[in-house]
Each structure stands twice: as C-alpha cells, then as structure tokens.
Amino acid sequence: MAEAGEKTELDRALALDIVRVTEATAVAAAQWLGRGDEASADEAAAAAMHRAIARLPFEGVVVVGEGEEGDCPVFYLGERIGEGSPSGATLDLAVDPIEGTTLCAKALPNAMSVLVVAERGSLLKVPPIYMEKVAIGPGFPDCVVDVGATASENLKALADAKGVAVSDLTVCVLDRPRHGHLIEEIRTAGAALRLIGDGDIAGVIHVTEPLQTGIDMYLGIGGAAEGVLAAAALACLGGQMEGRLVALNREHRAWAKLAGLTNLSKKYTLKDMVAGDLSFAATGITDGSMMAGVHRSSTAITTESVVMRASTRTRRWIRTEHADPKKFS
Ligand code: VTB
Ligand code: MG
Ligand code: MG
Image 1 (cartoon, helix red, strand yellow):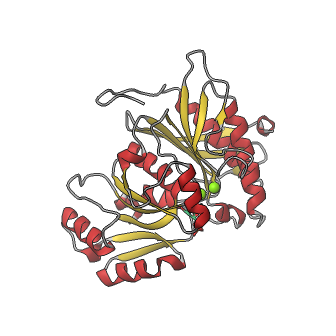
Image 2 (tube, helix red, strand yellow):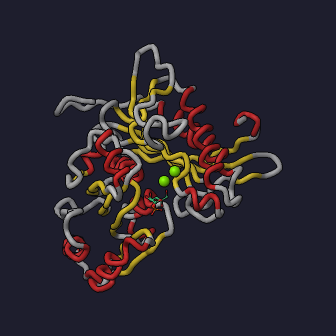
C-alpha cells in the first residue's frame, strides 16, 4: 500500500486480464442458470474463477472471499493464488464468483460475477458476516452519511444537499424480514422504496446514477463481502459510503475475531474499506440493470462486462463474442 500522501497505481493492463476472469466465471455460472441448484452454480463459478486467476501474471491474496480456510475449497481468506510476476507483484483479491446465487439458480435478473484486484493491504479483510451500509452518489461532498444515524436523518441530509424534499428520494433496500423496522422508518419519513430480492453490489452502484436508476440512497444490512466490493466500485465512480460490521451469531463473532476485527461497532468509511488503487470488474450472468447476461447463439457466447479503475476513474463497458466456447473448458 502507498505511504500517506504517496499515490501509486496498479498496472493498467490488469483491467483486461480481470475482465477475462469474470467472463469465464459468468459463463461457468450460466451453465447452471435456472437449475435451482445454488451450490453447484457457486462451485462451478468459483472453480472457473480460481483457474482463470491462477493464470494471471501476479500473486493474489484473498482478502474478501468465501470463508475461512477449511470451510471452503477455494477463495478462503488468506489464500495465495498465482505464481507472481518477475516484478514480484502481490495484490489483494476480493471475489464474488456469483453475486446473487439465488438469482442465478432461479434465472432472475441481476446475477453477476465480480472481481476486484487492489494494491496489497489496501482492502478491508472481511469474513462472511454481514454489514450495515449506507451509500449515496457523487456530487454532494458536504452531505455526510452516517451508518449510525437513523434513516430519516440520512434522508434529510441528502434531501437538503440535493435541494429536494425527502419525498422526492428513493431508497434501495434488500427485501428481508430483518429490515421491517427500517422499511417502516423510510416510509414514515416519506421516501420511496426500491426493494430488491438480492444483489446489493448493484444496489449500491445504482446510487451513482440516480437520474438513470431512480435510486438516491442505499440502506440496510447485506453481506460484508458485498460491502467491500461495492465500496471498491464507488472508489471508481465517486459517491460516499459507510459500513458497520454485523455479526448475527457466535460463529460470525468468531470469524470476525479470526480476521482481527474485534471492534464491531466501528464505522468504516469508504477510505477505510478501500485505501489504495484498484480495478473492479463485473460480468453479467443474467440480464440486469447494469449489463446483459451470458447469451448463447449457434455461433458464439456473448458476455457483457464493466471494468473500472480507481486511480483514473475510467469505466469501460466490454461486450465480447466468444466464438470458441471450448476455450472455457
Ligand atoms: C446479501 C447481499 C447480497 O445476498 O449478502 C444477501 O449483500 C445475503 O443476505 O447481495 P441474506 O442472508 O439475507 O440472504 C445477496 O443478496 C446476494 O449475494
Ligand atoms: Mg456469491
Ligand atoms: Mg454475493
């Protein structure tokens, strides 16, 4: 990681490398599309992602993955993947082979494969527990969002910054029983709700383009891994986010401790979660609001991806035709 004040950049050629990884992962996941078998889809996608990362010219250390060593065959926290490059570069890896496993198993919109590579030591290392999140888009540097504040306080702050009424705002929230109180509070404050079944990385990303997506704020408790991955996207797109880890049971608390996260009331700003340069790639598995999913014709497989870089704030959309599907086997 860079010293304070020093700015370093990742090799920009990595962008295309990591898109190849998410493409191969999405294609593997898509073979399980609509089969109702989340575990097999996840396993196939994780194996494909692992194979593809192992071919890249760097050594990656998993800091956001599937779980603790022994609990999962690949992408356990601390796993080192790849042989490294002559320059000896080692990078942080944050992975979600299938973001929205249920969406994939049911062939519903918005399942995608996500990979972030970042400067070594720059990403918050999180076990598979939960995170309470608040996020808003760019353009309101004076609007402070606070994961410890109530929904109505955060909504009021954003409405004031935008010069609109709270009733003009729409909040995206995961549709879960645990959010009963939050949903009631948002409705009482007068804002509209976009309730999503899964996929809060896309939910957070949507706050960066409120005019297109209709979403002004993201609130609620989702995966901690998805929190860091979404923070990585915001580091490339602008916007603000705060997160606070949530351990729902004893196992979660044990995992948090193992990962060195002892203060569960700590509020993590965007910079606490992503402290250096990074590249973020995602490929659609099913058609979604960000990208089309994997499509097969008689002659090719088509994928759509986005790849972004924090240091230059570049976002590229990549539509790829894969005429030789055998390359994925
Ligand atoms: C969250 C959310 C994800 O799964 O992790 C959710 O962040 C899991 O929460 O986007 P539940 O245990 O309540 O299902 C996703 O929706 C999909 O991975
Ligand atoms: Mg997943
Ligand atoms: Mg996920």
